[in-house]
Image (tube, rainbow, N blue to C red):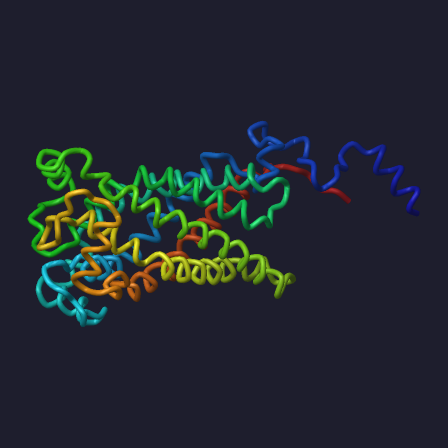
Length: 333
C-alpha cells in the first residue's frame, strides 16, 4: 500500500508537497508571496490603510478627551479626570466637539498605516531568519515601521490635535495648515517628530512583540478552533498589547502633545523644543504625575483601537489571501 502510494505520487505531476505553490497559481502569486502570507506588498498597504482609518475614526472621541487632558497648560491641573474633561467639552461646545479634527486624522491615518503595516510585514520576513516566532524580529520590525510611518503621520497629527482644542481659532484642516506654515514655518509640522519616534519606537516594540506572543499563546490554547475564533484571537491579543504599550509610553505622549499644541489655547511655548525642557516644565507645574496626564483615556483608546486595528487588518489579509487563490484548481480524488 505504502509503496503503491509512493509510486503514484511520483508518477502523477498534479501532486505537490504542501510547501510548494501549485503550478496553476496566477503568475503574480510568486513563491516569495506564498512564503509570506501569500500577499503582495500593495495588499499589505491596502489592508493596513483600511485598518488604520477604521481604528482612529472609531476611537476619535476618546482621543479628543486625551488631548484636552494633556494640553491643559495655563495652570497646574491636579484634579482633571476623564469625566471632568468630557463634561467640560460637552458643556462648552456640545457632542460635535468630540469629532473636531477628524478630517485631519483621516488624511493622515490611511497613508501612515499603509506604510506602517507594509514595512512591518516586509521587515518581519527579512529579520525573522526563518523563525516566524522570533519576538526580537517582531519588535525590530515594528520600530523600523514606526519611524517611517511617523514621518508621514506627524504633520496631520499636529493639525488634528490643534483642531481638537477648544477655541483654537482654526476654521479647518487647510486653514490650520496655511496658518501654521505662514506663522511658524514648515518645521512646526515636525516639532514633535523626534519625541513621537522616541515614544512610538518602544510603544511599537512592546505592542508587536506582545501581540505576536499573545496571538500565538491564544491559538495554542485551543488549536482545533483557531479558524472559528480567529477574530476573537486577534482582537484579544491586540487589546492587551495596545493597553500595555500605551501605559508604558504615556509620559512621552504628554510631551508630544505639549510640543504639537504649544502656543495654542494657553499651552506653553518652548524655545528649544527639546524633550528635556518640556519634561522640566511639566514637572515644575504639575509634579511628576503631570507626565501621566491622560493615561486612562490613552489606555481606553489604545486597547479597543488595537483590537479594532488588528482584527480589521487580519480580516483584510484573509480577504486578499482568498482573492489570490486560483479560481479553478481542480479536485484530487
